[in-house]
Image (cartoon, rainbow over all chains, first blue to last red; front, side):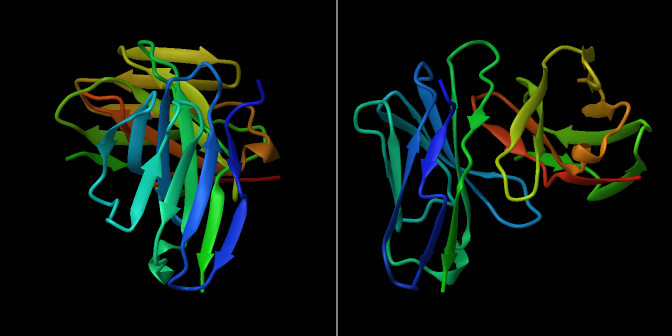
Length: 114
Length: 109
């Protein structure tokens, strides 16, 4: 297994456009998380899935953001009507349901909204 | 809510030892993680502590005191490639850890 993968790695878009990011977790991991990270800050939690169920969403996740994990494998994060403040690194992580639940991160998608 | 504090930046010399501290205040406790993050890259897992004491993994060790809300990451025999941000993350009761802002470590020759 090659770890968590994310696509695209970089995205430049104009304000008001919609963007969609994809995350493929480690295959045996049933939990998947989305985070956002800006310069000089740690990752901030956005939402998480256990299999296909979205179990928790942060207050940071405005109604312009939506995430899905339709078959309990890959996940997508969509941002509608992007704003300049959405510019950040979007990180995906996955974990296996055991006592430690260590999260393993993908390489991230760096979004720049012009 | 949760409050996690780490120093913003530290510098050290190649070959030396450095200790990066993390203090936290949480309503519960269900594990503390340390991650390393090189500039522009994703965080990579370093260590996990859930019981008090020291966990050693090669050049890296992590210590936890739950009663003091305190952890540190100890890096020995520093190498230039250890220059990175080190993130402390604490999980209170659920599955989601909260990350600190990270400590930027600069290793110089």
